[in-house]
Length: 226
Image (cartoon, rainbow, N blue to C red; front, side, top):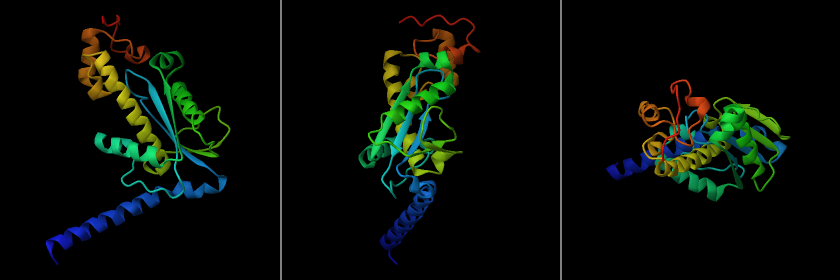
């Protein structure tokens, strides 16, 4: 066997294993397909010290295959960007919900996350019949809901929603980095890295910091002078 043939066989085996993995991630979609239209839901941004929480709701065609789609946290930024485009192209419908840092401070992060998820579902062009959620049950929705622990690694629909939410939020934080320099939002995306916390202590918080998240390590929180 030539080296070229050997490489071709390795590529074929890699593809076979990837298709097998993707097939396994359709387990829940197949289990609940008799209900009708299935939608995956996930969020990005529950933990950061700044910026919004963003939810994605994605309806994929039956037995959809999107190579290398996985939990967004397991993917590189470049891979997420590529998958975002493919999901937007192949999905039956995509909805995005965004809830601001002010609202998070007002009603708490869990309720803000639910609000973002309800927004995302309301923006779908097709009404889903069953919702596959990453770990939570969303109050105020009439559809059947299936909370799946670590669902973004077990359901293709939820994985797609996680990518949509993550890429949408990351892009927003990159814009915020230009508006509020000094905090490293383009790299930390608002999460509490040591450098980010040091910047808050040095500069004071900026407009998009979540006051309820930073009060434990910022005794006095003057507005960052723009």
